[in-house]
Length: 224
Image (cartoon, rainbow, N blue to C red; front, side, top):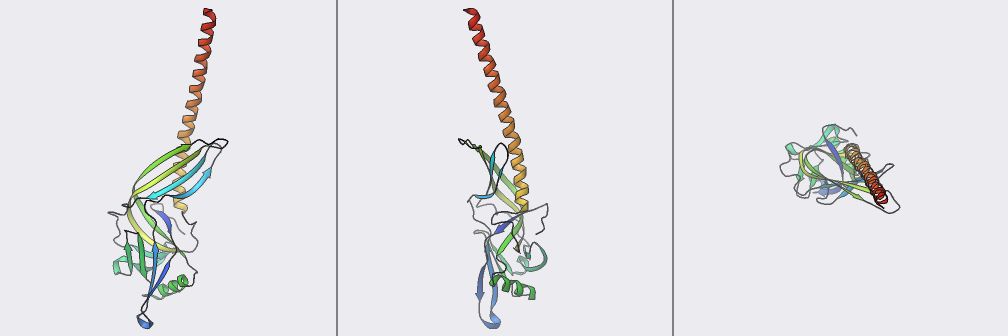
């Protein structure tokens, strides 16, 4: 799956097949849900010598308000031929859920994709988008006998543009993609540097307090 640097990708849930009509009037409809609003999910976890990390993400229920969906397309692995698109009415979006519904009966390749989905050969989707605004939060949890757990949560509050919804052959996993990992690595590196700086500060503070205590003990001894 190609990854473009100007956008992020997330996997959708499994397709649903919705046949409408019979014979020549039958429409080849597939449906997929983008995500679940206001429900944190883990992008991935990571561990280094000092900490364990959990990279979490939440999509706010109002994230798609004002989103540019003027011409969203449906592709395969985010590239190549177009199977459906919003501008001609073969792809419909419901941003309140949010979900998509595509009529794949208009082209030969669309009907082939429908058969692949109906037969269980293609089961997952991914959507490409640009984030307009987000909020980041970090919590460190001390754990006895274990490394501290650092949980980083990114809440996407605005999705600026939705480019495409694509059937994918091999999604990275059920929750994430290469672009999400790249973004998360940056946040983890930033958190690691800040946490190590805090750790060095606490060490120097403890040393200073120990020196002050020692000097105070020496002064008390001399007075005696």
